[in-house]
Structures are given as C-alpha cells and as structure tokens.
Amino acid sequence: MWGELNVQGDRGRTRSCYGCCDLAGKKGLGSQRQTDSQFDNFRGAKIDFLTGAWRHWGMGIDLLSASERDAIISACLRLHLPELGLKEIKPRMWVDGSEPPVRRVFEIQLLKGAGLKACWGFSLDFVPHISAGRVRWHRSDKTALLDIVVDPRDLQQATYLCGAAHLKNELELLAPIAIARAKATWSKGATFHGMLQIIREIRERKTNCFRYDNYRQLPIAYALLCAKTGDLYTGACELQELIKRESLDEDESVRLLAYAREYARTSR
Image 1 (cartoon, helix red, strand yellow):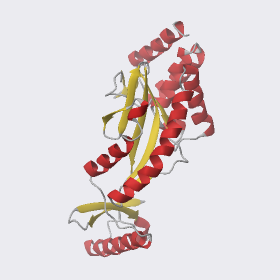
Image 2 (image 1 turned 90 degrees about the vertical axis):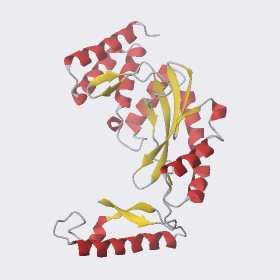
Image 3 (image 1 turned 45 degrees about the vertical axis):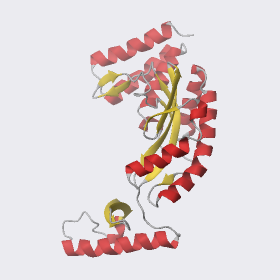
Image 4 (image 1 turned 90 degrees about the horizontal axis):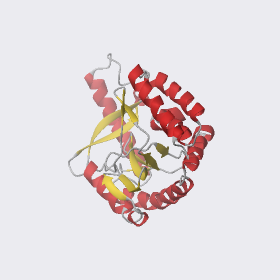
C-alpha cells in the first residue's frame, strides 16, 4: 500500500512524496495501535530512505507546483502540436476541432506519485457520456473527451517529482515519440471503420495500460461506431451490456438505443 508524506523542500515549501507503507512493518500506517511517536519515528526513517534513494540515482526530491508543471508541459507541446492543427484547450489537453464530428485529442494525464503519461485519440460528437446516470454530450473543443483513448502500456512516463530541469528533459524524450504514435493513430482512424479497428486492437491485444472496460468511453464509442457503420446488431448488444453495467434507467436506455438505430439507418 502506498501512503503520502509531507516533505520540507529546499525552498521552504511543503511537498508530498509517496513510499511503501510496508516499511512500517506488518501493522502498517493504518493500524490504530501505532502511537504518534511510532509514526513520527517511521516518518523520519521513510523520508531518509526516499531521499537517500533519489540521491543515489543523482536526483533530489523537488516536487513542482501545478502551475510550474503545466507551464513546462505547455512549452514542450507547443513545439510540436500547433503545426498539426491542435490547440491547447486547457492545461495538458490539446484538441483539433477543425473537422467535426471528429476531434483529434492529445493529453498529458496525471498519475499518482507525481507521474505523467501521454494519451491520445478522438472525441466524437455523436458519442455521449454517462454522468450521474444520465446521457450527456461533449460536442465542443472545450468539452472534448477521449472517446477513443490510446493509453499505451509500453510508453515511457515522466515525473514532476525531481524539479523543472528533470521534467523538461523527460518530456523532450517522451513528446516526439508519443506524438509520432499519435499521428499514426489519427491517420489510421481517418474513417469510422479505422476507428473500430483501433478499438478492437485495444480490446483484443490489451495494448492500453488498463483493461478495455476500465475506460468508460471506449465501450460506448465502440457500440455507436458499430451502428454508424451499419452493424446495428453488434452495436445494440454492446449497448445492452453497457446499460447493465451503468445501471441506467429505462428512459436513458431507450435514448441510447434510439441513437444506435438512427445511426444505423443513416450509416454510410
């Protein structure tokens, strides 16, 4: 189990770092039997362990603030994405909305432990999302979501735990590789059939970091793309599974299935 500690940085700010609570012994930090004194002793030992490890690797703990982190990410991505037609819509998220109903998206997502990873794919105007048991839409650049999300398990990640220079160096290595792969995805997904193939590869080959159904938008995108390409049977079956999983009421279920039928009727 991973726990969070506050670390006093060299600029006098309070930082957070993560370490393994197993170092505390079998009782762990969550044990009510531990006294405050025991916890304080463990906390000091844990900080010494973490800082010693980072120093052994030639790095010190220097957790960046959100504004510092996002400024570095933005500066790095501005070297690559504007020339591809993408604009920064909000921190760490870039969108090309020039050809609706399809929007190309590139995003740097946050991870626990001050990590960062690159994801990309498509936001589709004809694919809704489920919020509080209701069907909702994201049909603008500002509200874009990754309906088709490529989140490669084999792509390196970055960290903002070790200061500005370290993050900049990692992004300079990560960005060109991730963006080249994103361009290949966008090219492959130039048609609805191509998008379906991308999702099938994620589903069957397990190429993303997490399981297919861990990504809430992938199943609904797959179902409605099936309908959009004329395969209403598969689309309806996939939607029925999603309806059960999301525990949608009858009205919302009927709405989703009606969209699938309409897409199939006008499929091309």
